[in-house]
Image 1 (cartoon, rainbow, N blue to C red):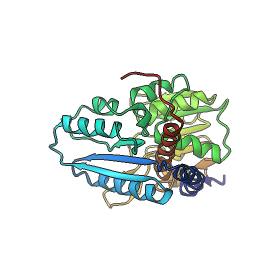
Image 2 (image 1 turned 30 degrees about the vertical axis):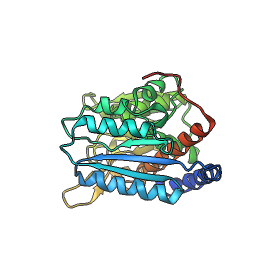
Image 3 (image 1 turned 90 degrees about the vertical axis):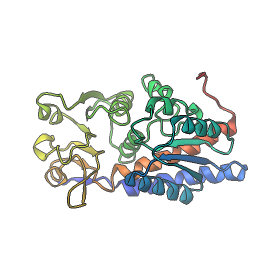
Length: 291
């Protein structure tokens, strides 16, 4: 079978060009979208991610600022910074780069961000609202996957979608978003018995486990759509996904590569959420929820 490779970079460029127009309209109305990024500690990977986000903001017309803190910073200092940004009318999105140092309470940090500025989509309000299909900002990675499927005209309704991974950032929201679009959804975890039995039944297979190349061609149904969310750095320095690209290529009908698949879409949806937050701010739209 000839597998169609899903070019996430190309789709991301198209989406960004569309949202750049919306950002330009806001700028003409004297409201430039603004994103603030908070990073704590000296995690090298996090620093790269932040630089990429700042560059992407610049390319699309979003103002950005980075607030860097040493790893031993007291949690209350970060909470104070977030509160200041919550009250800053020029900042429409706030992102706290994860992971945080071990002495931080992640949930307390995330829920201190104003819902109207939670462009990562991690606040309990936004995650919980996925259940009813009324979230304000969808988590960026599963949001990006849904946009990829849409742009490739892959129908979700009526399909059996299998999500391997149950994280709060990808797995769980991914399952809810597929369910909202009419898929029959199965969630698999590291504890799932006979995993290939489930993956081989999937019309749409989304893998987000953090385990290099765990899904092989023998575990995939012929013609299935396979979305690889994982990104792993091997001992030789090369990157690979959670899907064994070589063996799945030729079995799947569609396959997203690593790198160049979901990764570019994640940052793109962050930009889209930030522009949307600015549009909502300009329209005076608030969320009916009190923290």
